Amino acid sequence: MIEKIKGIIPNILTLLNLFFGNISIIFLFSEDFLSSNIATIISIVFDFLDGFIAKLMRKNSKFGKELDSLADMVSFGLVPSISMFFILKKSNKIGFTYIECFSFLISIFSACRLAKFNISHKKLGLTTTVNALFFSSLSVIFQNNYKHPILILFFIFCSCYLLISKIQMFSINFNGYTWKKNKIRYIFLLISIFLLLTLHMIAIPCVIILYIIISVYYKIIKKFILKK
Image (cartoon, rainbow, N blue to C red; front, side, top):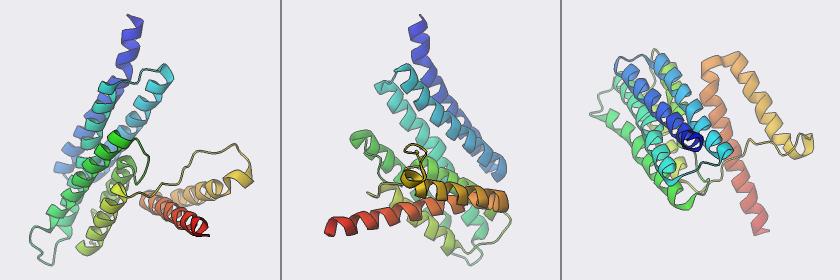
C-alpha cells in the first residue's frame, strides 16, 4: 500500500504542474499577465519536484514520463504562445494582419522539443521550462510598454530555433565548490543576483539571455578546440 502511494506522489506533482498551467491560461484571457507569470513559476516548481521526488523514491515510470511531457506541453508550450498572442495583438499598431498567430510557433516547436527528448533523452537545446519563463516574464514587462512586433517576432523565432537546436546548454550544477572548476558558474550566479536586485522582473529575461549566450560561447569554443 505504501509503495503504491509512493508511486502516485510524482504523478500528483505532475498534475499540479498541469493544473497551474491551466490557471495561467485563465489569467491570460483576462490579460492578467502578472498572475499568469506567478502561476507559471508555480508550475515550474512542481515540474522540478516531480522529477526530483521520482528519482529520490526510484519511482520512474513510462506513464509518469508521458504524463510529464503532456503537462509540460500545456504549462510550457501553450502558455507562452497564448501570452505572446495577446502581447503581439496589443503591440500590432502597424496593421500586420494576423501577426499574432506567429506566437503559436512556440507551442509547435515546444512539442517537437519534447518529442525529441522523449526519443533520445539527450539534453540538447533550450528547455521548454526556461523558454516559458522567458516569455512569461517578457509578457509582464511588455504589457504596458509598446514594443515593435518585429522585436517580439525576433524573440519567438530565436526561441523556436533554440528549442530544437543541438546546442548543449551550459550546466549550472556546481562541480564541487572550488573557484577553478566553477569560475564561469560563480560569475554567472553573481551577475544574475546583481541583475535581480537591480532590475527585478526585467532581470529574468536578461539572465536567460545571458545563459544562452554562455551556452553558445561554449559550443563555439568546443568546435574551435576540436578543429585544432
